[in-house]
Every structure is written in structure tokens, then in C-alpha cells.
Amino acid sequence: MRLVYFAWVRERVGKTDEEVDLPSSVSTVADLVGWLKARGDEYQYAFENEGVVRAAIDHVHVKPDAPVAGAREIAFFPPMSGG
Image 1 (cartoon, rainbow, N blue to C red):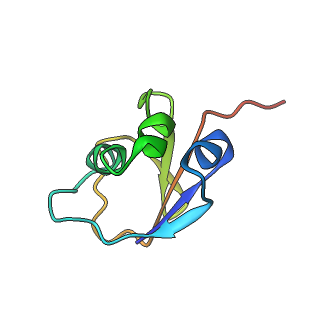
Image 2: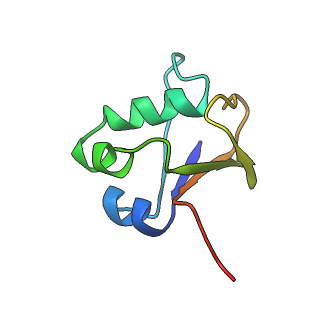
């Protein structure tokens, strides 16, 4: 599965994207975030406020309880504003 990071999430993680093999215990976006946070300080820092970081599965915005099974790409990004 490909993980993609945008804006300050990318800066905190230190990479734009990565390929990962998820353990069977990861079934939702929230599980994925918890798994990532356990991978190191950079992930812990990027996801320190889980309620702020948004996710999209295969270009569709999702909530933390969304299942990740079958996803090709999951993107993480901060809230956006614009005009």
C-alpha cells in the first residue's frame, strides 16, 4: 500500500510517500495512524493531534473508522482552507 503525506504532515514525517505492508491488526484509518505513530518519533510528531490530520483513501476523503482493506493509496494531510 502506498502512503502519501502532504504539507506539514510530510515535513514532520520527513518523506513525501512510502510503500508499506500493513500488519493484519490494521483494519481502519485510525488503526493505521496508531501503527504509524509506533514506528518512530517523526510519525508520533506528525500525528500528535490525530483529530486534525485528514485522510483520503484512493482520492476519497474518509473518516478515521474507514476500512483500509483493498486500498491502493492512503493520503494524509492537514485541514485546508481557501478562498
